[in-house]
Length: 292
Picture 1 (tube, rainbow, N blue to C red):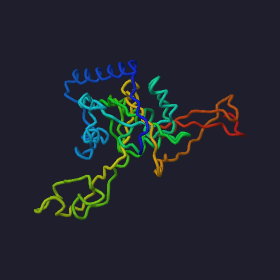
Picture 2: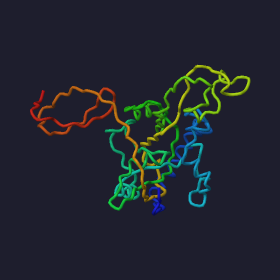
Picture 3: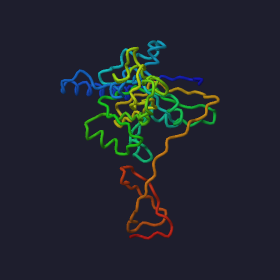
Picture 4: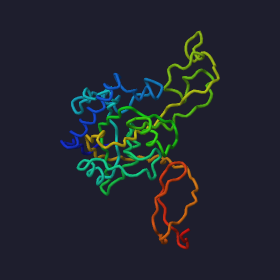
């Protein structure tokens, strides 16, 4: 990845709105008598592997001169995350803020989908005619996080709101791995240094065979943030990616829905319907179909 141009966003309108959202989150903590919201690593189940990659990497490379990491408020789960977009859409976000669309085609409902893994954002950043891709590095006030390990959860936003949470953290690949045969620290569980007590024999971890299944919590994790004011695009990065083979995109499961064509609808008319699994689907009235 070659970063050709990095532009720092200066928007008092967006920044003031973002600061207000942080203040409201801190007030919520105070009213609830809490010191902080549960962090991503706590929800993920492992304090080391569950750390947000972007924040951890910037700390390791010493990026304080460019990005004020000290001002990230961990009590409200403020983080730095990537957002991929076309150059046109990225420019509009900088000018007018994020415009959240309906949940059509999104695995976890409506919202801005941000990632700790740059590659996942590159998938969503189409290559322009000049060979450049646009990525926004955003400050995100995640607040109280709704956590799911479902592969897809189309009503995640409804569940989030009912639970009084502020955003959704989806970890769809945190699946149960195969049974461990030499403890739990062997591949593909390299992120684990310890496991259940059954795996700790007289010679330390991995000395015993517990025969139980253990979590493989390797991402990529998706942060879905519905409220616009909890996002601030801090940098616009224009980059070239040479020799990159785009990984396959996640596919949505298929479902069949029997629809009634409404009165007055003609062939080609668009309809937005809600499937039994909670997702919204856009379809057209086919030729030959009649109301009823």
